[in-house]
Image (tube, rainbow, N blue to C red; front, side, top):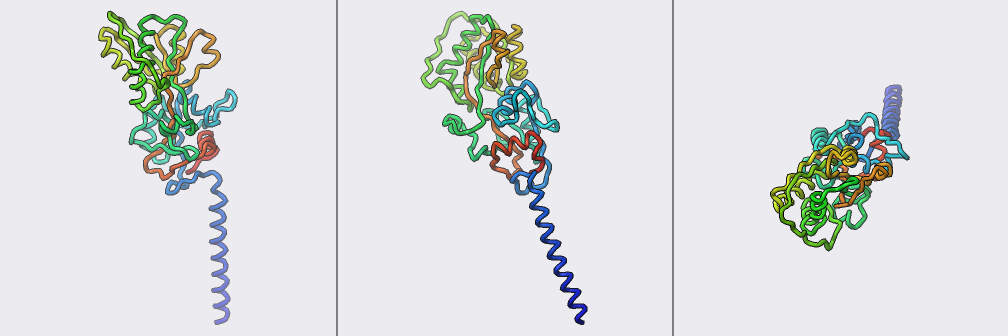
Length: 292
């Protein structure tokens, strides 16, 4: 009888020790996870934009993923060629995380806070949201009069109102009204950033409503490709969602900021994560953290 009691006591002690060991192990292994809840332990699917994307260039620089001239985005990242593909990928994968233009946000995905700050127009204007960048139009060495007039419309009161209505941030608080000119006709080719393209399309539609004999063709090719096309004279106007590089400026192109935009860090709507620090985001996109 005494022997059975002793054995039972030993079994209880061993079970308690095993339980404590398991708790310790679970705690110790938490170093490569984020603060997700029901996502905990699931592998993170990193979704990034392609090389040459203005959104990628701005995001990697602002989040410390870019070190010097080296982009340290994890080689395991799924690469998407456009904003819409990033959104579709994240909306279809509960473990995915990506980044897009705030102006392109819809209810198919969830934007999380960064450093405790929500990605809103008000927070970007106040300078407290840490992931924001400019939208630029890019011109080459020679700019024809029709393209100059379209830029004037973009920077006018009417153009800046369209920009704000589209969810971007205007850069001219007291812009003057657009001065219409009679007899304008011709074609303007525009190419570049997939983030700028949606608001550019609305600006083009409004401009054509005033000037019905003007045709505007918009190609979504990415910021880098749009800038290159402007340098080569393949398009009249480039679109960029990042600042121009010194080597691009040296080739004779100029950039004019038409709006400001935030970059929203997005996750699947089923993901319970609501907030990540800039450092956590850096660790996820460089592959240092691989599980939620």
